[in-house]
Amino acid sequence: MKTGENLIAIALSAALTFGCAAMAACQTGANNNSGIDPDIFDVYTAYAEEGGTLSYSEWYAQLLESVKGEKGDKGDAGNSFLHGSGAPAENTGKAGDLYLDIKTWDIYERTESGWSEQPIGNIKGEQGEKGEKGETTPIEVTNETYGSFWLRCHDYKTMPIGAFNAVTAELSATPSLYTSYKEAGVNMMIGCWEGISIDALNLCADNGIGYLLNPCQGDLNIIDDAEGSPYINNKNIITERLAVAKYHEAFAGIMVTDEPGRVHFERIAATQEFLDGLMPESVKGALWWTNLYPNYATKKQLYFRTPGSGDKLPSELNKQYPYDRYLAEYMEICKPKVLSFDNYGYHVGVANRGAVRSDYFQNLSVCRKAALEANIPFWHFVQTCQFGADVFAPTLNELLWAVNTGLSFGAKGIEYFTGVAVSNFENSGYAGAMFKGDGTRTDVYNYVKEANAQIGVIDEVLMCSKSKGLIAVGAMPESNKKDEQGDPIPCVIPEEDLIQTYGELTSVEAKHALIGCFDYNGKTAFYVTNNSIDESDTVTLNLNGSAEGYTVLKATKKHFMNTSTIQLALAAGEGALIVIE
Image (cartoon, rainbow, N blue to C red; front, side, top):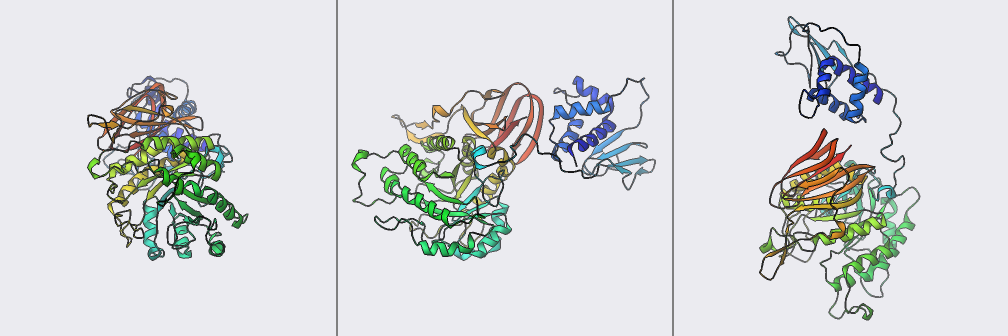
């Protein structure tokens, strides 16, 4: 239905339903403190959910214009025009009343014997011609438009949500694993040891999942660590294995390497060039995926990846190789389409559980800055499993906090480590994941599903926005570092990321909140995170005037209007989106 026709239909139904007297009450604020009649707003909400593009103010102005007439004499009390979702209940109304079902737009009439069994009419018009594209989103969206990246099988509104070690060779042809990923909101699989399986690609396609393949089965990396060895392992094998897979609709790209050292950067660049040369014109938008070390890696790890006992940093580095340099050289040499990194914020040891790594926000900060400067997105890894003595499988609140703090910083992709429980690493301390080794779901699967349900409702806004800064209010999480008295030192967000106000927002009241501020195609958007792993919070945002828009909390979208204060009740680690329209 055309927007104009839809507006007229809604306007007429509201006019019949509520009459001019109700609309006059709405104008004067007689119905509630906001001046908005909640019944009329119900009809506006139905209009918006059907795809209507007008703001409430615009819609209401046209509604008044469509029903405005000359003032008449006061009439006798007449019949009512009721409304609701679904057919009318038998105990409502009286003879002569009409009823509008706002689900179907059917009209029912009540007689002395009850409501009509069938609708007496319908106010919804016929399907109209497709309208012209609006001005909110540019006509042509490229990766450069918003500094985003989306998979070949998705559109620009869809945030990549991935799982590392997403499938094993043993599970590659198991349909239930892929449908479970889809149910949990995971839309990207990151290969590890399983090689290339056409069965796996077919099952990915059936479930809307893009697959980043590792064509070197049994080897975690295409590039070679050995000094003096070929830059790229097994070129002929890679070419042969991609001959068919690269044309598959679920083919999203190649998993090149995980946590490389500085000595690998030229090899990564050469690998990307080699892979570009294998792709025909018809295959566009593939990603050559590399994931960087966190800022708590040692200087020798950052330089060599797996340093030997005799490896020494080049003399010109003066025994130092800081993370900022590692990141800058990667961006300059490899020129990635996506900046992916891992920093597991609760990598603090069981004895310090409840604390956060002191370097966590610093890592988000430097990657945010590098991504904005290069006009590319950053993707943020979230831990789902235990590995070693320091890292434990997360609770729901810990996982939500890791996801939502990343989104507040402007992450445009979330990656989970791991999908299926890891059995290939020599480290026997690995345990837990979204799935056990046999494909059985774990508790963490349900945590991921809850986090991704929220992302599935908000991703279009974040994918089509630019991060403008962060507002931190109240207490910061305690870090794993202690002061001289043995008391925990709070985590710190770098000053260069922090702002005091943004757009219509003048102040925030909260015990511990982190608010990401975004330009959403000229509109103001906020992503609000309860910056605590163990305490709930009520976050109050004060605006500089009356505003309308919507919030998304617990994957539920709710409109608001004529308000200068927005309150959000957030569980520990929970996040919510606000868009001011």
